[in-house]
Image (cartoon, rainbow, N blue to C red; front, side, top):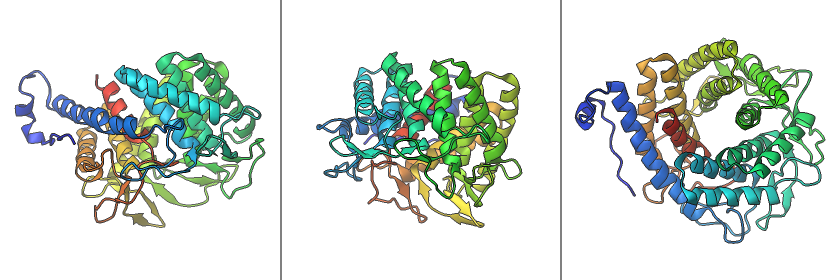
Length: 411
């Protein structure tokens, strides 16, 4: 396992003395980028490239903490869509042919096995052999189908991927979009009949629908898509976000009445930069100006309320009680969200917060024995060694995306 440089701000002048014209903040960013990119290329992507492909086809649906697969484990649509995205983004940013091979493998398997040829959209799970298993249509999972396939087109120019992404988007608009109250409904049968659940409108679902529409609009400048992206920005900013607390409200009725009071710090800091990204891609200056203000307010509150003294971001707070567990994905989003807030504001506190969280990741979250990261860390800062490396929800999407964001934001 590689050795990581320790970011010690007081020593940066010595460490980067060959660049005397760089500001202190530029030197901090340069060293932060160096370490994160090293982890991305030598640890995260290297381990997934080695262990995730299934010789029987596609990618394993389950890998334990030592990368051992579980025989017969189903393959999840969320995991596989995120693998399409991860390997495609890796090829786009790093220009390494090995990632194009993996991206093409992921794209081919997803289109062949997860896309429903009869009713459109994508399945929630397939068997280990690639046969449909859970055929219900979750908007969350279909959003990631759009996200991954549009990224594959963005990276490779493969029009089959763009056509597939557009096909899923059209089914989502036809069946899951609410033309009365706005936003996307969560759960449907295979034939797109709505499934009654307690909270048909959910923050996490609509957050990633926003992400998917943003990425699709990058590569397909359709006017209808542009309008849906604009409306989803409005939904997230004015129906999901509570602008008194600067937290998102997680669970909603059809007409956006909030049902439970939970502050999800990781989702909120992720939202701060995904909302800003969506407004940038939309290209409406008035909307962008207002969203920048919101993004800074959201990031400020998460910094003040959501950070453990060690530098990690807490999971969430419900009924006034913080859950003192730390998942891998929340820390990634904290680094990107605080860097985004720093570039918007120039306020050093955000840069320092990003550095502190990265230092925490290096100390507690990276798995120096088995590679990649632990899924989570307990309240006493010990790793969850029995947790998985891969399943429907555990994937390289969050931590690799942090690396790609740092590389592209600070070229």
